[in-house]
Length: 401
Ligand code: PLP
Image 1 (cartoon, rainbow, N blue to C red):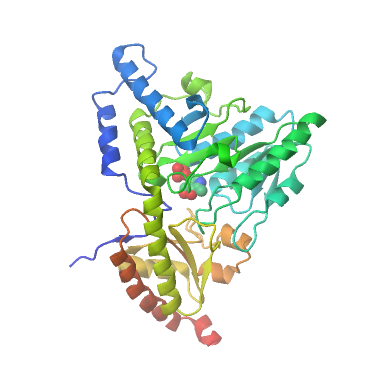
Image 2 (cartoon, rainbow, N blue to C red):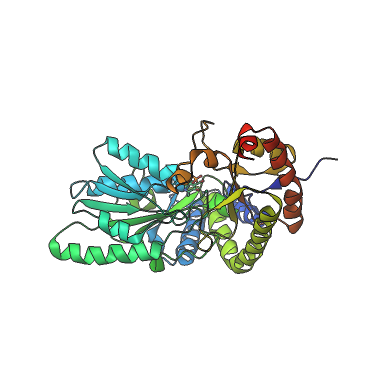
């Protein structure tokens, strides 16, 4: 009999919820219009677009719906926030601050800007993966124009002190305004938090915030960027007058409707769902501690996403364990995941002070809506056996015994 697949990779992506597909459906055929068209078919699509924008704005606590721009996902939102701010403010300053543990959508965008003459400070993190807000303060220079720090890390689940960093930037901006220095804008990549925990742009004190629908059971290829009113940002896509001239291209109405509805559902359910997920995660963590020797749990013990567990299994290759689990129908990801398939250790674990050797044996388990207690029981039954088998073949393990 074919084993049930146990998907524990929700931080990579999540399945579309049937209710969300149902909400999107009419916009794929009957209400197919282009929201820029003046006729009734176009205006029906425009109404759906406006309603979705209002919903996303309300759920993120934006002051106005026009502070929400729809994009093609987290990567585009991050690119737009960073390059858009850099281009609009380059005459005022060319210094950007970020952290060493950002997603590549942020890191590689910053590296690109370095080649274009910008200077970037990559802040370190502590052993739990947290940025120190005072490090942000100390790194701000007269020519700083942007700070971009993620809300929660996708690999280890650590939640960053964004509201505290927001306060630091606000204080510095007050001093800068009286000294005639340029404003420092603040962006956060909330791709791993939107739909999972409360995301309130006012409370966080950010000027820009990126989200992506496929992380919260919405469709892929759709995201949003919150841009606080009066934030100076230049478009990176040029063409029609869509999105108030900030992002050209006919809006993906079905996907936008789906994203708004998925976010609404996720936030309605998140308190109960998070309690359920945290219980399952804790059971899993306790089970691994009891049944598997020589493991290290990565990330902050408290300030962390309820669904994520990053575990280093010493003396084995994470890739080998991932493949062995896959053969058992259990799907997870490595901390060293890289599009090229290279075995470069994770930049996140490295920044947290974890040795390359330990980082290589790291797996990320991310739980979600369809994870059950039976799933966790099965993983706890299979995982210790696979780890023991791989360690039996490991010269490192033998040498360490
Ligand atoms: N930022 C973070 C923290 C992510 O985890 C991801 C996706 O894994 C992205 C950005 C990119 O989002 P998207 O896949 O929607 O382009």
